[in-house]
Every structure is written in C-alpha cells, then in structure tokens.
Image (spheres, rainbow, N blue to C red):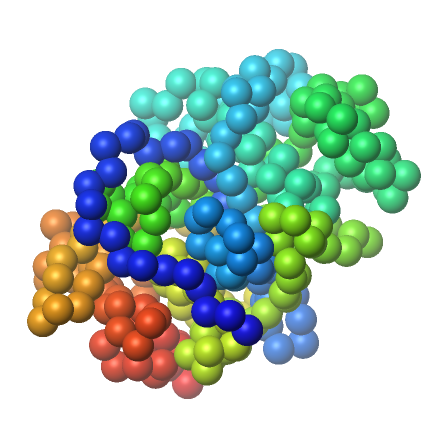
Length: 297
C-alpha cells in the first residue's frame, strides 16, 4: 500500500479554520466495539491515502434547516456540544453536516425507517443537487440528531503540520444503524474498514494503514472501552474536550503535543495515553512506541 503523502509543513496558515464534522461510527462485535474507517483516495488534497473517519466541511445548506424538522432544539444541541456561544445556525449545521457526510461518504443513513428503497432515493436526489435535509423531509424521514453524541473538538493550529488547511472539527459518535451496510464510493474513498481500535493502531504500527494524529489519538481513547454503550456513556458524562495541538521542532524532528503534555499550554489531559507524537520514520510515533498506543492489558 502506498504511504500517506505527508510533507511536514512549517508555514503559517492565515485562513480561519473551516467548520467541519467527523463521525466515529461504532458497532459491537464479539471482541469489543469496532469503528468504521475509510481510506481516502490517494489523490485527495488532504490526507490522501490515509484512513479516516467519515466527515467533511459544512455546506451552507447545512445551516438553513427548519427547526421544526429537528428532533432536538438548538439549545439542547448546544448544551451537548458544550459551546454556549455558538449560534443556532452553526449548532444545527454541525449536526446536519455530520448526518449528511456519514451518508455521502459511507452510505449509512442515521434515520429510522430508512429502508433500501428510501436510501436509494435519497442518494439519487442528493446526487442530482437536492439538499440533504429537504430530501429527507420530502421522503418522510426524520433528522435524528439524537443519534449523534459529541466526543471532542479539534482545531488545526496556524502552523498546521500535516496539511495546508485549517479545520475546526467536532467529532461525534454514532452507533451503526441496523440492517445497513457501509460502503465506499471509489471516488473520495477507496476502502471501507471496520476495525477494533487497538487492532487499527497495530495495523498502523505495522505499516498496513496510514493514520493522521487525530485518528491515532482517537483510536487510543476508544481502545479503552469494552462496548458501544460504554463509549456512549463516557461521552455523555463530560463536555467534549477542546484539542488545540501545539507543535515545535526538537533535534530536527517535528513534535506535536496535546493537552496534558509538559510543553502544552493546557495542563489537563484530554484522554488516556500519549500526549505527544513525533514525526519519525515517515509516521507519527509516541514516546514508548506501540505499547504507548495500547491500553494496559
């Protein structure tokens, strides 16, 4: 498999971070919860060839959904995000982007009553340019924001080590809907992978898949849970942590540190496990190697 095309960036990015949403879709298995990952097309401008969670930037139409179509009020969504200063349009837009991108990127529709015929109709209409939310309304399908549980928020720093773009991404959890199969489109994504978080980290260390830092550290956090219900309960028990990576160069190597690291401006850790990654051997490595990425036995 070709390696992810990463060249460490040291230039300051002056554009503001683009609001985005990412969804970690989970399902239970006999060995524990699995998470869905998609391999980005090798020609993608951002993280080409890497395995990522479904997601993407907000569309303007995501912000214009009628409140009456929602299953939760903007106030309730805002409280779950832990961001009291967000306006209603942004709060709704983030959740809509998460639902829409999950459908567009992996074919999973997080809505009750979504049989195969309805899903084909949604796909046909949205491909022809119809907005996602009105399409669901026309077909009598609900917008179920309650299926999304906020998990974390990542803001790309001005010196963005792995991209030349900045994102303000809210990570959500969602349980995979019963009776639906995830798939890739061979355009934006070329592989669909359900994987135990710890196994995904082992594959990364072995060079079988490529991961960027948010995926590495999110998998490490997920690896500590024994069921989807346990992950969801943990997410609902605390506000989503804000993660603003801080980078520096040490002995000629790029180091990215995170909350809880001695070099980071925030002393409280955001997750168990490593608080810094170093770009070494054409990948991001924690101090302590693979063992540092895995939960204690």
